[in-house]
Length: 212
Ligand SMILES: *Cc1c(COP(=O)(O)O)cnc(C)c1O
Image (cartoon, rainbow, N blue to C red; front, side, top):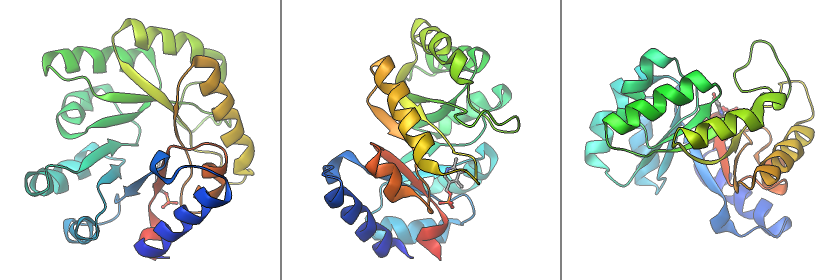
């Protein structure tokens, strides 16, 4: 698709579903791409990026960030507690809080670094064993725990099962976020970001479509 075409598709999806374009932020997922490819997107005006591995981000991003201080970096992968310190140093937003243990580690580290990074709770909407995210039955308790720990929870995030119709998961995440009074929804990837916009996504995480 390429970057320009993805932007056009986002514009169209917003028009078609009466969403304000300013309500939808494209998170450019650059996990498979090097600093030169990222710099090319920044040169075209892209400001929000996502990476799913702390280690990879640590090799690419400090130099990019020094040159482009207005760029925001989202963590979208599974976060191990032993990587929390580095993640809080490197990232601006953590999208994948999915356990009380992780919430506590993030809260402690943010206090140490005197930061308050916006966070999302990742929900395992497809109840997949191998996937991260909190089970729906445990979401309310985790949300309360995060709030009590002082985390700034902005919204919910999900990765629908690869072979399911994504609409059901997007609608479910939207409903869950409304029940908690949260506004932000991170959902939709290359194959289905237009559907996610229809269901209220405020952040879409697009990787491969930007580059193929
Ligand atoms: C890789 C990844 C994406 C982007 O997926 P594409 O299909 O390449 O657009 C989005 N979200 C997460 C959590 C990812 O790991």
